[in-house]
Structures are given as structure tokens and as C-alpha cells.
Image (cartoon, rainbow, N blue to C red):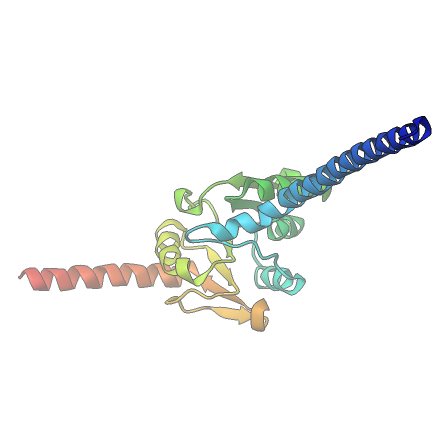
Length: 224
């Protein structure tokens, strides 16, 4: 092989090496961009997906405009304290605060709670709202006279007992999407997925008390 051919072959190899290194760097950049995008996507999506993984869950499904309006409509003559159980992104709590309620939200997902606090500050109602990272089964709702719940069927039986034993007799409970299984609603508003059911605490507390008395009487008769 001539010196000229050796020189040309050497030059071609150098170009190939440089081209290979360039493609390698490009591959690393692309991998980094894709990986970073996936991490960012997970960070955004995780707060909204994670609640659905709980054993008895309150999956985050944002309330529709009609649902928020129906909740406020059935509570239009009410005032005082309000709690949204499973408050999600805080829209019910914030809307209630704008209508004069001292409103609180309880949510297990910390990302949604922080986002709700930011929204309340941005909407100018942070002084009349509060958001708490907490399991609803570990919280007492005795201080609230208005309760809003976007529940799921699996939890409504247990929640009936909890609320009936804790709430004052002056309280009203508004269930959205799913009604309580044994309580008799005072009235309803909306239709379809936007339906809300309103329950009076005097009624369901009385039913719980009579049910307890009935059980005690039956037990006493059995023992006798």
C-alpha cells in the first residue's frame, strides 16, 4: 500500500472515530432529555395517581363546576365551619371560603395539600382556609357543622357510623357522586354525576341512637 493510500485510510479512520464519539454524545443527550422528561412527568402525575392506590381510597377526580355549584347551592343558607373530606386540589374548600365559610380540607396526598395551599393563597382566601395532610379515619370532625364528602362506596358504611357519632346535631352532610347507604337524604340537587345528597345530623344521629337502643334491647331479651 502506498504512503498516499495509508494517509487516506488513516484520515478516514479518524473521521469515523470522531463521528462515533459525536453520535455517542448525542445519544447521551437524548437519553438525558427523555429521562428528565419522564421524571418530570412522574412528578406531575404522581399526586393524582397515587391516591387511587390506597386500600380504601378517595381517588382524585376533580369536582366539576356543576358539582361545586350544587354544593354551594344546598349550603347557601348555612354558615360557620366546613370540612371537605378528601379535599383533592382544594376547589371545594376555596369556593366555600369565598362564600363566607371557615373552610378546611383533609387529604392524604401531601402534593395535593401543598398545591391547595398555594391556590388558596393565590385566590386570596388563605386566612379563611386550612389544609391538612391526614388520614380521615384518624381525625375527629366534631368541630364542623358542614361536611362535604366525595367518597367511594366501599367506605360509606364506616363513614356513616363515624360521622353520626362525632358530628353535632346541627350539622349538615353533603355527599357527592355517591349517597350514603342507609341515611335518608333531606333533599338532593343536580343530576347524574353532579348530584349531591344532603343529610341532616338530627335525623341520622337519631337513627343511630334508636338502632343502638334496639340492639341493646335485643341483647337484653336474649340474655334473659
